[in-house]
Length: 120
Image (cartoon, rainbow, N blue to C red; front, side, top):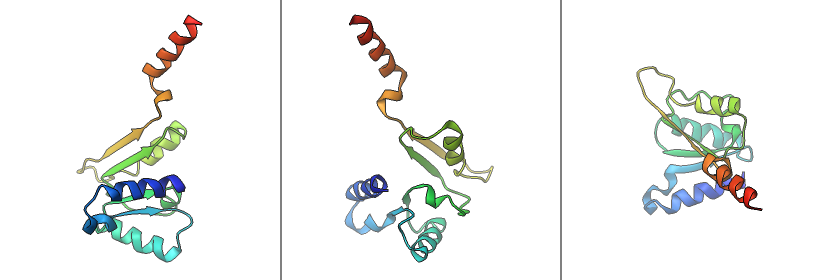
């Protein structure tokens, strides 16, 4: 939860002050009223982004999420696929799913690590 809040603050810092309220964070610590209100705003394009934990996906039905971003390769491939599947459901639309993975998960980093181990 703290990481999603930090990410929300960071993204807000990149925006002009009048747009800072367009980015919100959404987690299990929020009130039911806040969750319901922000979900409606998100579905109606009144806010631009939600830094969300899994709690956002619980029981939510927002069909046309245009961009889904996974921060960190911390889940199974089936969980990642499910999260990316929240991106647009309308076959006439195109969405984007992005994974920001830690460098230790990249092949280039694994190869560097293996070469360093060989030299020892």
